[in-house]
Image 1 (tube, one colour):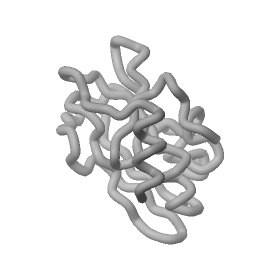
Image 2 (cartoon, rainbow, N blue to C red):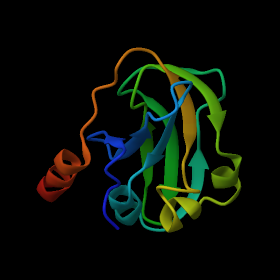
Image 3 (cartoon, helix red, strand yellow):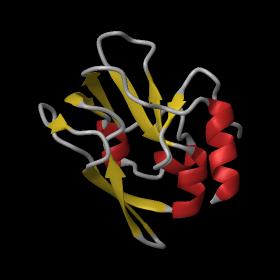
Length: 125
């Protein structure tokens, strides 16, 4: 699965969909999902939480490890994906679709990589 061209990416392996001006949708990339292994638990930020770019805002636990989820942008969480909380394996099976994590009303312009730059970044990992 290649990285969708319409998304922005962080060096922490999250994707951000800025298509909706009201709120950006955030998830983890297929690269991250594969590296994590079978995801068994997802802790997301609370609705109303204020996020700061680069700071931990949740956790993803897999059969291999526990990894922090980092805020890809400054903003306020407006929605979380309850389906992924109830069925964390969605992160593995559909990371760019039903496995999205939360939506955030973004303050400012986040610094994101395009799909090509993210693909180059993951080659270096």
